[in-house]
Amino acid sequence: MTEFEGVVPALGQALSQRGYVELTSVQKAILAPELRDADLLVSAQTGSGKTVAFGLAIEPTLLAGRPRFAAAGAPLALAVAPTRELALQVKQELEWLYAPTGAAVASCVGGMDMRAERRALQGGAHIVVGTPGRLRDHIERGSLDLSALQAAILDEADEMLDLGFRDDLEYILDAAPAERRTLMFSATVPHAIASLAKRYQRNAVRVSTTEERRQHVDIDYRVFTVAPNDRENGIINVLRFYEAKSALVFCATRATVNHMTSRFTNRGFSVVALSGELSQNERTHALQAMRDGRARVCIATDVAARGLDLPHLDLVIHADIPKNRENLLHRSGRTGRAGRKGVCALIVPHNARKQTERLLGNARIQATWARSPTIEEIAGRDRERMFDDPILNEPLTEDEAAFARDLLARHGAERVAAAFLRLHRAGHPAPEEMIDAAPAEEPKKRRDDFRKGVWFSLSVGRKDQAEPRWLLPMLCRAGHITKNEIGAIRVHQGETHVELVPDCVERFLAAVGPGRTLEKTIALTQLDGVPEAPRDAPERPHAGRKKPYRAAEPAADEASGDDSATKPAGWKPYQGKPVSKYAHAREKNYGRGRDKPHGTGPLKRKKPGKTFD
Image (tube, rainbow, N blue to C red; front, side, top):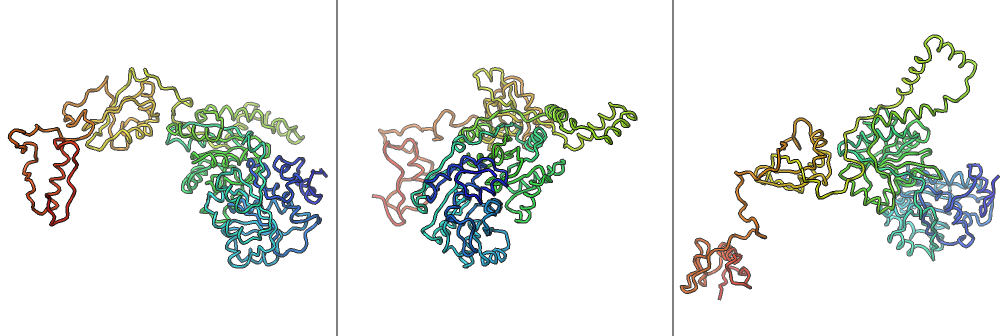
């Protein structure tokens, strides 16, 4: 049995049986003698063995030198996790780690039978693992007694705060004895986590590992650019290009998960879904199918982004761009775990390139940009995988050798090889033909890009409320081009002229199609040369003026004192009469004219019955 420094023999036995040869950095860090009884605030790379780490950390507090636990009563340790899947996974890890000590581990997880959980708690448990909402429910109902609690662990504390569980966490910690150890494990330590630690921990020691500072060195980040309406085909081709044993596709919404699950199932992939709308039983079966190898692709929302450990997960695909760096890192952290290599692929519409570059920059990630794999590239990878297939190098048995000779004698080597090729291809979905998207490397904008620009006319204008701010994204979306390839946009009364870089015109017209229509109703026409403004377009009445003031009228004849030329038609001065709202409106409009003396503003409205002096 391998000996682990600082680990008691019972837990060391469990680690050896699990196949551990050496502890990870975070596990070694928390076993330091000076941290034996301290409160800890630990940040470490996801996939670094944090669950086993806090299991080892609380052992001196729970066992206090004893080889085994006494009879179970009120819980001695409480572990809180943000999601049902992570809580059940933590329970499984602690069960095998503490199996030699006779520990009883119970779970309190939303979506499970609460009566069964209550019976388990009444029967006694040394360690309880649960989600914040269900744990609070048990405490309020009196079925969970925390009076004997010696250690509390918050796993993925930053995620629990992001999900709105702060009130539940504070309620749970307030219900626990003050003289306890509190361990917080968080991938990041924002201000909210620091304030929570300051309130509920006593002189907490900050533990940070080198892996956390180097974040995800075992992950190869790839960004594949696609046309905006070609995202699903891009995901299919990435799945076929890598042919990972298991892959995880992240989507932003449940509706997208359902749609992609149906689409990929029809395309021949073995797919399971994982989202918040599924029951706990359905989610458990989905994860088990991935672990057993019955499914190779899991399409999930961010409910799967935290803490889940799927074996042989070699590929993570972001179907929707993550909202922030934390989501990106935690999603990506499902692969490249425990020293294994992994690939993280972002499927990015070319008009979202800048947004993705900012996201990667904030996360300090260096990614390789490329176009989505083509049919030819996927076929080349299939040939390489076939040549390197281990089954071709295995020795033949006597029966196999005899049968192989019979096949060759009857059909010939070429036909037998062709049959083998057909069988191999039949087990793989066909790749998709991709629309020619923008180049992976965004060209730098030059002054001479539009020297020979190509002009187009759109059948919308000012009368249709046409504006560049919605015409620009419409052109990018429909024509599969970027905003850098669009030059001048001139909006006239009945039509709009748009200038494009010559290099993108062919791709633009191919994307628009032979109907030459945008958004179903806007007609597109290519022009010869630089267009002139339509002759029937009326002159803009206020062209060249900063504000749409009406033109100044001739000044009044000061000698005669007659200023009627500057007054609106029908205007009469007030003569001490009550001010009606209509008269006030006329006076107010007159006060806004440019002919009013400098420094005066519009007259204030007076109540009915009042008069001007």
